Image (cartoon, rainbow, N blue to C red; front, side, top):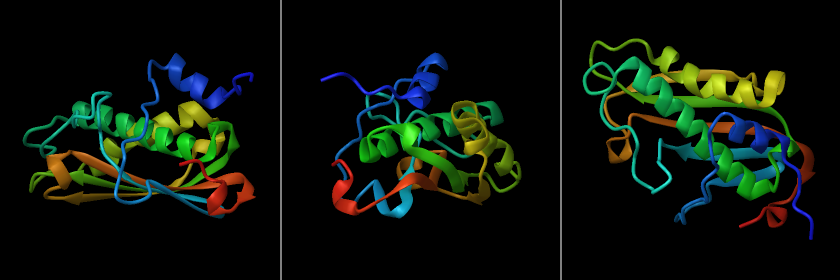
Length: 166
């Protein structure tokens, strides 16, 4: 069987990213309903499964580190999405992104951290990667991760949940 071409995954590779295999979860990392994929919150997990960036922005984590962590979160979200739908080329567009940034009390630059996530999606998908977005500061996130993001993705074709790869 011939490997399926996936231009979006190839672009990620050209940017220096490898899509990790999803970790087993007690919940579905991606739920598909019709032509929408709802991607659960993901954090900045490294290839070995450890959290790559921990702490609060403005205290333990610099803006540049937070931006890089948000890019890694995008890679992890896309890895789960690819596992669920088979090819990132099946993405019609990124619809909505909701980002949480662990922040010290005086840190107010959450949107700049989330630019890392948004910039990566636009680099991979072009205009289809542009999306509505919210960036919210919080004092702590699970595992002390610095960033967590969820997203809603429109797919090119309508699917039923049983078609999603597990």
